[in-house]
Amino acid sequence: MNNESEKPSNSDQPLTTNSDHSAGLNQAIEPNNLPVKENEVSPPVAQRANPLALFIPGEGYLITPILIWINVVLFMLMALTGVNLLHPASDDLIRWGANYSPLTLDDQPWRFLSSCFLHIGVIHLVFNMYALLQIGLLLEPILGSRQFVIAYLMAGLAGSVVSLWWHEIVLGAGASGAIFGLYGVFLALLTTNWFDVQTRRDLMRNSLIFVGYNLVIGLQAGIDNAAHMGGLLAGLLFGYTYYFSALHPSRASTQAGWLLLMPPILTVVTTIVVYVNTGNPFGEYDRLLKRFSLLEAQALSVFRLPPTTSAAGVAKAIDEQGIVSWRKALNVLTEADQLALPEELRQRTKLLRQYGRLRLTSFTLLQRSLRDTTHIYDQQIEDLDRQIYGIQKQLEKQ
Image 1 (cartoon, helix red, strand yellow):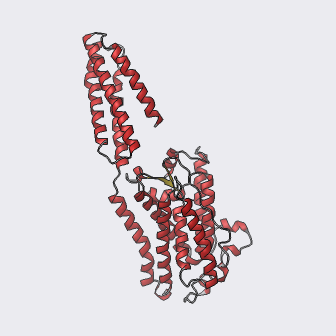
Image 2 (cartoon, one colour):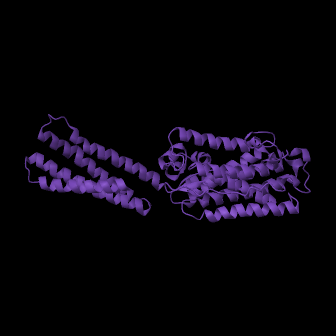
Image 3 (cartoon, helix red, strand yellow):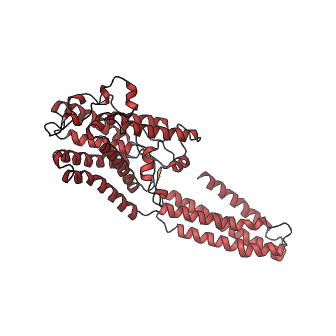
């Protein structure tokens, strides 16, 4: 279901959901024995005869179909631009707004929410939208459209933040953090007297099976259970807050109103704290590699001098531009070694250092050869070129 996590390129195992979640909903959709008027809650869409009504916004059921259409239309736009329908590439997901920690932490915090509307393949989308439809039918008539969308966005944000905090590096996308949050709201209400006993028992069983099953499935590699748990906990908090605010509806504009604001405020504050205090070694590593690439290009540009350049002129360019650039590039890699990086990136840095040292040695010998007009270094330069080619092939495979 997820905020699915790629590493970068695993596909999430979507959530499934029971089709009988709406059983008993018409028995009680307002808190049992609480002072809420019957006409304040719209009849559930499940009672409508036309199945197409499930995808059409209406009274008491406004936000769920809108959210579904946003997710579906976004996926269609991705497909129209050439994104693979079954296994989108990591670069495509990042370009469309996935929660990719090096960029999210690098002044792109909007990815916390944009990733909640992005899906990793059509199967991921279908299962998540089915789960959203099921919980939307149950919960939106209870919360009302405004509180429902607040709960969705709050849980999605919480899921993304917990995912970023938990994982060393994450590339995540999907609505499941938000959907788990909506189930969290529902589970919270099911532990109160909002429903009658029989309805509560039936819905609690179905909801726990749904949540438990998908958390177990989420233990598989490539599925972001951190996002699931973050959304679920945020939803539980919102659900209990909503229940206690409903105990005093006459004070909805004062104490009860402020009480409903507390979960969103707490989520936003937590997001800010995590964002500010989480280091971004991957973003810094990307910046260092860009500097390395620029210095590499600067060094190699000496081979594009005009054909009329004298040997002495080429030797001077290699000395003042090529050799100097390679030394700076090696210093950049020394900076990269100071970052807290996973082993695979450390291995890449090690290969880049070997590559840079070989280039520096080759440039030094070539400069001497041109300066002294000698061919005594030719064989060494050829051997270095072969080693350089081998390392380039290894880097391409990473």
